[in-house]
Image (cartoon, rainbow, N blue to C red; front, side, top):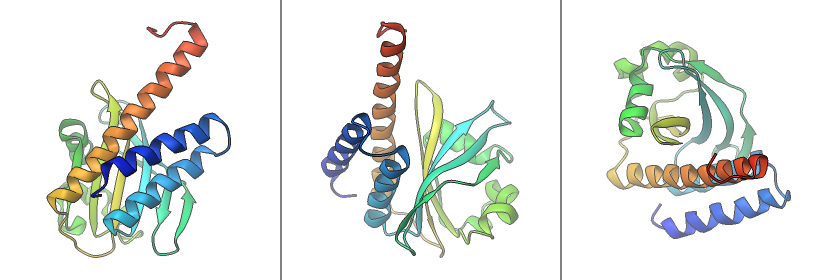
Length: 184
């Protein structure tokens, strides 16, 4: 993701399309995922929502872009928190970087239910949210062991920060429309 401004303008344009109801949330998320997938040359990019209390969190796929079939996919998977290492890193560091998921002790709880069935051998994830609250995450996966370089990690974190800012603005606008106050 050498072009942060390009991503910023893509998000801005898609937000306008959503607000004008010319595009669905799935289409917009899919277009963003496609941009990330093509830039980072990974297998899949998935947007996940996160809900629940620490230790009982659940991540649910919302939308994805499948680089193999070159199509946007509606989310259908849900995975409960397993051991806390993955979520702990996302909350504490805002990212999770793994070049070999099958060998990562923090991912052993989801190896048979998620990693093996979906052939996820490398994983890069960045969380988005506000004020220490994780609303969701963006994950990039590869079917082969892969070392994610510093620029790729930084680029995905920048994307997650842009998504955080956009979602925070949309939440504030929704609160304003519902309550008449920008402060609630």
